[in-house]
Image (tube, rainbow, N blue to C red; front, side, top):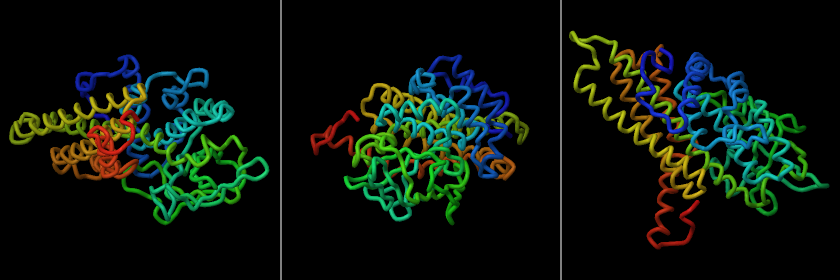
Length: 395
């Protein structure tokens, strides 16, 4: 079985929240191009280079990028639709897309005009990127870093090592955080710059969201032009948080796609499987399972597209993005587990897709902002609402 179940009327199940023609095109692309490769990408743990290049040719990886920079100039809701529909076929493709969107968001939001003109049009031509924050000694705590950057002769010199970097195996461009004299800062780093190398560390593989080994990135006196500092020196943590708040909504959409794939697969199985002289789907207990799952998926979809609206409005992005990812990831894990249960022995066979769905769903409850971190972010939004502490309720 592929990730997209046959003969399921997805248009009846999942109404479009952007124009129907765009969603129809996405679904056809996911079904015809991505789904046939979904199982292989996961099994071999490879970065889907050709698919990602083709996504760029079709305008799917530059959805919100301005038209004058080669993008489609569409809304964040369209970007959510792209992540959702592609992830139905392969969550790994969605993860590969996330790191591209993160790089674009960082440069669009904070980069110098020269940097925007140099790199953003390249994404429309298929530039593959990675978002390199993590270090061995610091994990996701990026307030201080061992990777250092110092100015010298009108350039920046970077030295250090990043660990466990998603999409690092195929990236042609990196967004890298390094500590400068004034604090953590962000840099644009081409893959082919002198002094940059990658290698596979001891703990490079994950059992979910497998889009190639997570690579270590070594920076050995890497020299960068002055304008490759992105944004304000010392403001890198804040900039990184802004980007993560944007990408969490898209991460929620990927989890939503996983939930849909599991649901559709189980629905097709229950429709076709006969047990005790009737179809499995005709048992009331099984129908209740599907009713619960459909309600939860619909609730998550509404929340995710509300979060997409917040991105467009620029208001309460941290709140809605965190809620969207938190809810969608939990729903995906529950739906994947329940779908496997409905399918009985087939649900736990290696030849079936449900193990992949469950692994991908659970992995996203940890990756890209764990459930605990998301709950902290949501709770922080409530403090000023209740009149406690400072902070803005808008971002």
